[in-house]
Image (cartoon, rainbow, N blue to C red; front, side, top):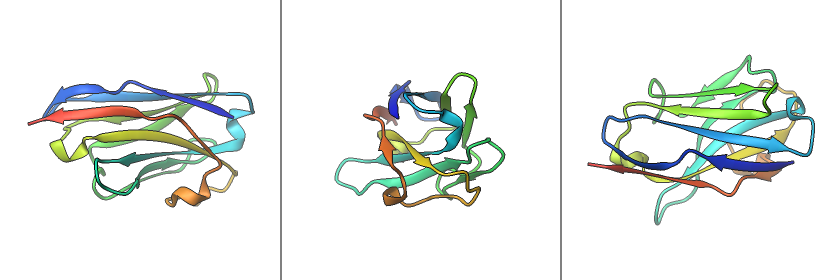
Length: 125
């Protein structure tokens, strides 16, 4: 499956952005989806997970209550709504797909089979 992330940009502290990740090439509903991020000089970290149907989601503690993952299987797209952004949210954000119908959250990057190219989010203070 091919993944194309978009929606990044420059935003002030407290602002909002919505990232999108469009999938093509396979049956999207066979895949659980995740968002990860990598800040400059840091390792890639898990942000959010959504099961194949959208019925189960899981968010990292650092973004819980501010970010929301969702998906639209009819549009082959997964979203990450980011509110109350902080400078520490600055990173390249990646979407990833895991071919599974498990509802158990996948939080490790090695669990995912396909990755998008990343979109940069910069939060200014």
